[in-house]
Image 1 (cartoon, rainbow, N blue to C red):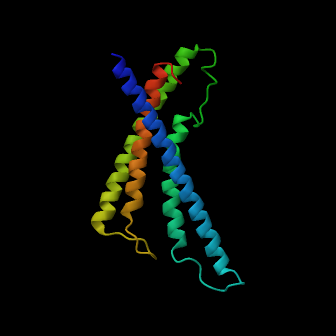
Image 2 (cartoon, one colour):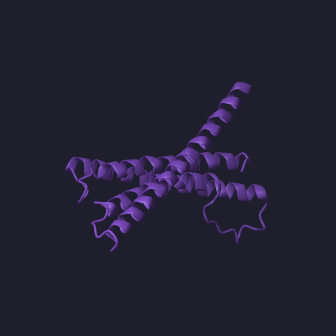
Image 3 (spheres, rainbow, N blue to C red):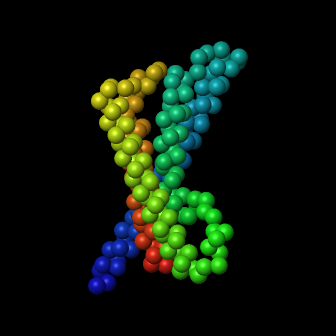
Amino acid sequence: MSGVGEADATRERGIDALVKWVALAGGALLVAVAAMVVVSVTLRSNLFGMAGVPGDFELVQMITAICAFAFLPLCQLRRGNIFVDTFTMKFSARINQLIDATWDVVYGLAMVLIAWRLGVGAISAYASGENSMVLRFPAFWPVVICAVLAGLVAVVCFVTAVRRTKGQQ
């Protein structure tokens, strides 16, 4: 029977590690896009008088959306989302954990809905052959990535809900 508990613990550590690596990748992307913006603005300055990086605004839009979704799983895992406990402060810790677990499930279901609709949008963008205006980058790729990351947020929400019902968080 201890094998089941060990497998659960290994799986939980795996999810925790995945979420951290996704957030780190999002941070690296954000640093890269910030550097690109600096280069683009510098090139446009009076000093160089050149055009900026072609399609810089498109890259900023796409990468910022991806980064936002990349940070959400870690935020959920670390309980970084805003919560209001004004009405529940007098409840026991156990009741508060169950309330938090319920809201984790609600948040997870909302993220499932968002992931689904992003998936539908990605399929539509793919089917229509939609591309970005300047770079002609296929528009469905960032949407697919965001859909997958929204799905990861949902999984993390359900994991945190289970952990809270077990009194682990």
